Length: 347
Ligand SMILES: NC(=O)c1ccc[n+]([C@@H]2O[C@H](COP(=O)([O-])OP(=O)(O)OC[C@H]3O[C@@H](n4cnc5c(N)ncnc54)[C@H](O)[C@@H]3O)[C@@H](O)[C@H]2O)c1
Image (tube, helix red, strand yellow):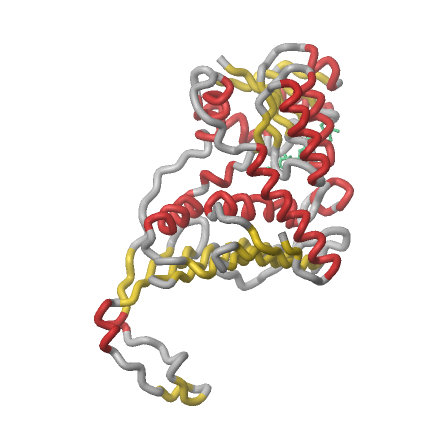
């Protein structure tokens, strides 16, 4: 039986309650600590024991796993305090404010021998799982470009996320998910990183960024997050030397397009377009292409907690490992540096 104690009973608390309910027997949320009395009142209404100091919370022994779900600037100190108090820790993303903070959290986990993982739940997203499966199947051949993006239309960054001091901004908020997915899927070494961070409507932090990751094989990944894109682009767009893939949005509508073999006998001709004559950019006749449906995947976000519990019990290897999170954070730090210097950061 494993019990979760939550530090920071805010917006994400409901999500974690939902996941615990899905896991069912053997897992429950039992306690909460928050600095806001109203959040504690809600936690009590949800049947939890509540604490208004970190000391009393950690002394309570009401749980064996601590979830740190505060604004990002408190992740490091609470994670280390919980590990030192003998608890296993799941920290919300982004794990920390800097690589130095993350290293001190990893060191605390090693020192105490307690499990430390980060809630990179988007590794279980359906759209991501489809892309990962298609790339693994080889259907696209060797990928040479992968574009992963999310576009919001409201131009608003909510609450503490709008402030640098709290670890706000889109690179740390959504960027960390999309970089984590990319590095989980593409396990080859990163060669270099280039990034531009822009504050379109939110003064203190990036509310738009574009990031290029160059991998050893020559594959280039582009990750883009925008909060004020009134016209939106596909969630995923990938080209390989044997096919292309597009997934439009989280509803996973999309397709794979491959060239027919008989195209080898087909000689492109110069076509007249509105922009003048072209052969290289001439649209291909439909009969030279085949559209394939995307594969169906089964995925469940609650598998994150199922794995954490199995790893604590010694029944499975931890899926979201601190070393992987560190690799992601190196890219994040490189992206901030690249934006500052205007140069690529070579790994
Ligand atoms: N994995 C995901 O998909 C996902 C989604 C949303 C948020 N998050 C992450 O979860 C964390 C919380 O985000 P949120 O949207 O729930 O924020 P939120 O603002 O809704 O909730 C934060 C809670 O922390 C409490 N808090 C603030 N300072 C505190 C302190 N010093 N000590 C104790 N409690 C404190 C607040 O009172 C609030 O209840 C962030 O790190 C965020 O990046 C992850």
